[in-house]
Length: 291
Length: 326
Image (cartoon, rainbow over all chains, first blue to last red; front, side, top):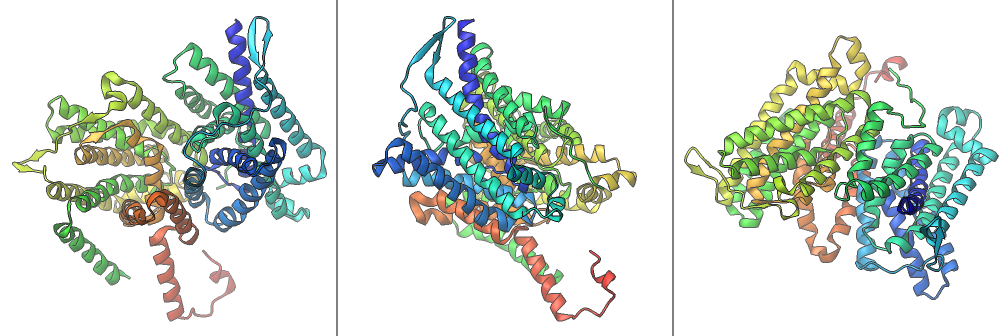
């Protein structure tokens, strides 16, 4: 039971990070039909921004802010202007290829221009273990969980309680109608790219103390984000959150209790089951087809 | 256009037959790789380009084909039998993979096939009793066919080129049969195709099965070419690469995959001058190609030719309604 609680808490922490990544992923899909195959590398990169800023002598908190700003500028604005905008009108597939190439580009860039070695990354909190009901829970997991929850709640409030958020939701649901209603659709789409920049930077700062900053980190994270988004529901933010948490918990539990060799297979099997049984995802809406 | 195309076609054939005579070992290897991967890309072009079913699992079928052929040959089977088994097994597995496509489309289908590819990779890596895991299978022999040994690089090149030509001819014939028309109808508008009495269910499964069996054939040619196979060769990267070939060449154009495969095989070699940065340069080149030729190189050429023809013959004044007709 004690080990179960331990696994559950660390699974929830991982799942919360997956959820952040998956939420950004679904936001891009909803507003601009961008399937971002480089999302994993988007999470890998800000950690290197932090390290680079710290090499210039910035304290950790400042480096983290710089990384978030750079992430918004490069992974948000530049990504949208240079890669997404010119190709969106040609359909989904060329953009898919392009983001796959972008993921390779970012990975190789981090390797060639920073380091091919895993870099130690400053922890957010000192390594203290808490004892709860006989289980050992690391402080780090709890902080990760707390930051992720605060971020998601903040995003939820932004999307549902503000005028801006409502305008973004309208854009996601029906861009043409939103434009007729006078919503500046293009700016709303840009905002979702900025939000994605913030989310991946936060995820990066949360996950790098655990995994170290390494150029290959994006490979597993990107796939995890896709799976979370699809399991939960591609067109719902809360679906992505649910999917991320299911995935994180399941990953930890299955590796411990079933088979560590096939731990990567369980999320995929769930994915196939969900798609066959409920293609729109656990919380998703059915998208209607046109003839 | 037709005369131009015929001349280009003839030149390509002559070049493919004569050029290897002047190349050294590695050049011949690259051309053989082009022929082998073209077969897999042709299959993906059928599934994706003609029938419109997104698949990110073609690399897995190359893997299944390669492992089937290698294992059966190690068990003492003659190469032709192992070859046919590879194709049949991939046909069957591809048929099963088609079932999800009956329920979901587009990006969902992309992720199901992506998941399938990773599952195949995990099986190849973890089931050591069958596949020798990460050690892979080494010493795959090149076959002797009707007394003709394909052991030498040049001989194996001509063998793969011949197989590629056979597959391409069969595909060409199939695309001009009612089946080919049905596949295109499936891509253009599945619901309308259904309402016209087309059995879309059967054709969707068929598109997957035939495309996958070409992946298996490609794998059965791949194993004797490299003579050493291991699971990592058939991970997602290969599927992405095959998708790249189809899109860069021009998805839905018959000759697209040949050109795409040529670029995907040669581009990394050309970029070796950038030394350590060659993957970086490769990624940048792919992004540029996608930005400038989103419909692939053949799509680009066709658009350019159409634009030229329109300029030569100024359109007769027509009613506005007629001009806006697609």
